[in-house]
Length: 139
Image (cartoon, rainbow, N blue to C red; front, side):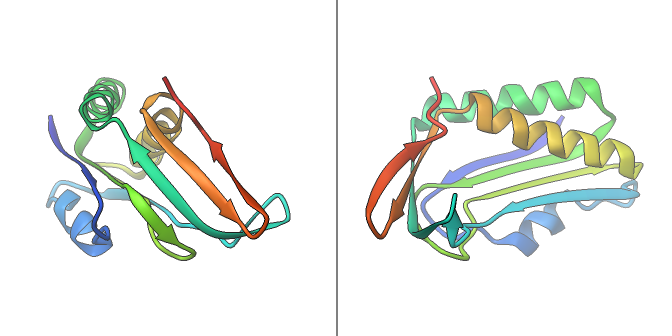
């Protein structure tokens, strides 16, 4: 199982994430890049603020990666998530998965981001012009 899992308050380097999962055996690489959008439910978003309980978040990400390796023929898997204040257009999360074939890469990547949002203790605060709200709070 070859994984790279990181939580950082520094900008994520998308190309280095892609480069890291590439292998000569990989016929399919799927990458999910989450970005801060400028509106939610018709309200203008000024910024997002992410907080994480890092020791538990890393353990949960490791569990997700292990499950992906069990379910699909994954060759390499990367999960990077940012914390701190992010402006519109910045990248809070990158998931990259390499497999011999594209179907497995697509399925594994979707599983990783969907499961991460459900189980990993990373919290997001949306800051609007008229207030703020915490969303996607996890255990």
